[in-house]
Length: 130
Image (cartoon, helix red, strand yellow):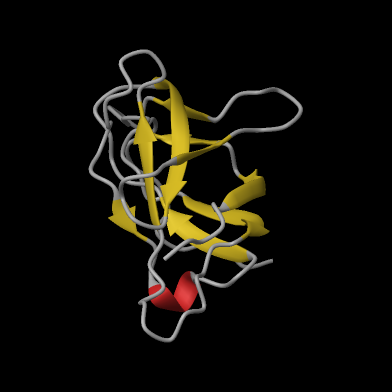
């Protein structure tokens, strides 16, 4: 079957931590095939902009988060910080890059924060009443 390539026109946010879990709201078109004999499946992934290798395995967008003109994707955990290319596919073979139109960038992954201490280490359990 021939189908139109999916296209991303806007997404937010365009950055997230290495530990993943960032919900990305994506707008565009052709995210669903709308063919009765084919399952509507959309995949998303991050790749390294230089090596073109996946930073994490491609993941399927949940059916309840997938519409013809928008979808919600939760970012996976990755091992490296820096720029990544956000890609989508209807078949896990043909991938389309999603880029910010104004900057040309795709997605920035920053190192997840790690809390090593809190100061003071103790305090009131209950707030004082006025």
